[in-house]
Length: 67
Image (cartoon, rainbow, N blue to C red; front, side, top):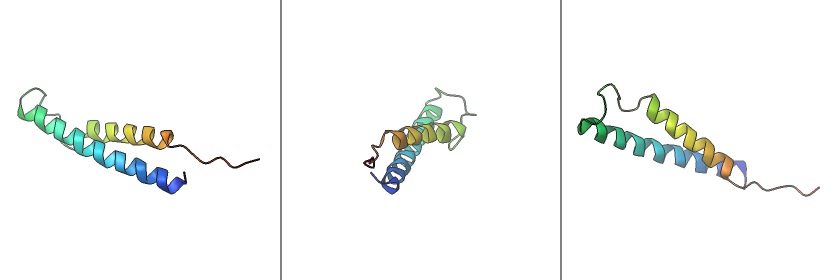
């Protein structure tokens, strides 16, 4: 797969993970299950989304050139 498609898939994974982690954090703060300092769009959300995007980018199969 070309690098463009791999980058596109990792960007989609980043956006979906960021939205999901943001919703999870908002729910946990609303239900008083997490400290209020655990804010939306914090390092936890961006770090988790970046980690998932990196995994998605690495798992995309690449096309190998014949020798």
